[in-house]
Length: 469
Image 1: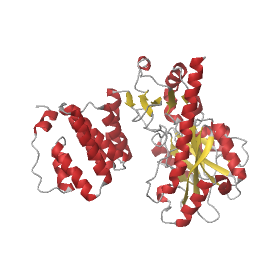
Image 2 (image 1 turned 90 degrees about the vertical axis):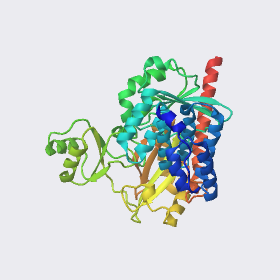
Image 3 (image 1 turned 180 degrees about the horizontal axis):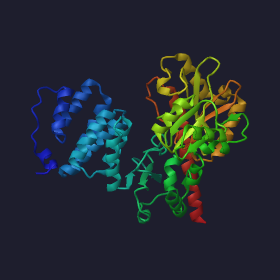
């Protein structure tokens, strides 16, 4: 008997009482038992667990819609349940239910895909890679239909093998946009001709280090597709870290630290010292791998004694960037983020930290009211918060980047210059809980999403005018 058949044939367990814990154990043994899902729905309602209630409500609605479908088809209800948990910020429950889904329906590529993302984010990269490989071997095109009246069909070029894609969930509405995700690194050119109809293309492969091996493939597709393309591959290619100093050169009141990309391992510390001298890199340096963001594997080195062994451990290719002490006069380190949509700047957040590696989640923002007050002032009026000179520089940087969607992380030096940390197409934005302590950020995230929506509409208008001509 197959695994799915066994699951269908198992009798419902005799649950001693309808606690969430006991019901969870019972559902782990019989995940397709509709009666148990109904009991869990009521237990979640009683416990006031809104996310759990919504997840099992969606599952029960799917079970009802599937009727007499096979166990494999009914496993899609478990997929829906897992996806609700994922969207509600409950990754462990989502992982659990995606695993149940794949036990019943091992060929469901999108479940492998979503599980890979969750596992990568929660400390199991090797298992994530196995699920990712399985997902894109099974399927290269994933269609997510608009849940309301469809206004556009957006083809999203992405990679299956790695991260580095543009963050989308805060930008795209499920209500009117049908998303067609295309893992182009797994697909042949013949598959390009078999794609569902689409109106626009978003090149979501936003990390130039990841895009570089695919450059010819992406360029061929975007040049032949006959549709407007947001974030052209050529624009993304110009955002390598080591190209930023030249890209943003001679913008008034802007400082872009020198950076080199090491492609081969230096023969010795003396060889590395010579390369740094040639690049005019002296003093403290930041060492990071390529295709990394969020401070992953980023380290500050003030001497060759620590830099050389760290480079040997990290390997090449990698980046070395001049470190500038950007401590403000009050002793804190500030990192501003501004998002560019169609080259126009929109404030997203300000993190203020006691440490040079500034992360919003570790900066103590929630514990320090004055920090949130300062962030609110920046969001409400960036020009007043940064000063006119700095804001004019930020605007010019947006035009130099020439991205339809991108962003910049930066700070202000004590003398008012814009010190650029990074500027590229992979800048993350996400909504906050409506009743949470960071809900003040949501109106500004809506401004970003609304601007992205306008840009898509304008792209459709261009396409319609082209067809009418």
